Image 1 (cartoon, rainbow, N blue to C red):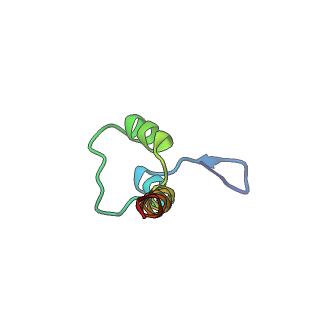
Image 2: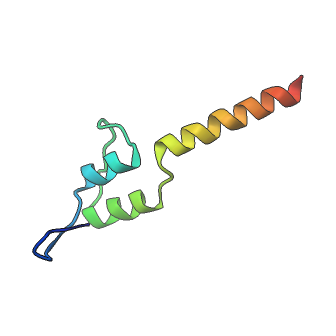
Length: 65
């Protein structure tokens, strides 16, 4: 949510929230706003997941040698 200078608030759209989490614009959320926001709130940010996966791959490749 964004707090405006006058104290009012504006909630993020599903698309804004998905972009903040790193989801591609082509990713769709076919459920209601509240359910989509819950899913996004529980999601691991895409860039973080990719970094962890690369690190895990590197560790596994080192272990095989």
